[in-house]
Length: 201
Image (cartoon, rainbow, N blue to C red):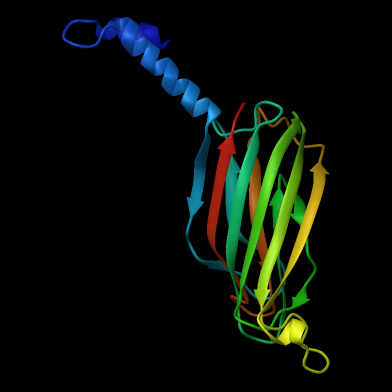
């Protein structure tokens, strides 16, 4: 198709068809083989009252699909928790299935959270997710006497590795990616960054 377009434009007054065609082939190879950003979202979205609420969402659709086994996504989500004594959580989903599904935790400080994930296509209907949830918190558990591990500047990290199966054909259908947060009051949990990168075979 590229050659047809170039021939319509003609060679007069410009680069030779063979040279332009070669350069377009190089660009196509670079775009296909490189890791490229397909989504950056810096909007600030918080939860609304109790229950899980959608924070950031993205539809993985043409041309940014996992079309070949081995294609993968690099994902970074991050945000903050409010400084109050309520239980909170942040969860991440791919195709409606939760892969970071922590329960509510007693997080009292105004501290940050981050989810990093690599989502790799295993088959047309399954992916493997390697993910980590990191929370930088001043007090992960407010019960009991002071404790250096929970009252000082501390953190916890949860790592997971799981397969999500039974998805609609990844090469032919859009796939929804979501982050959800839960607290007791509005904006107990909020997200202000999503970066999603795609590597296709």
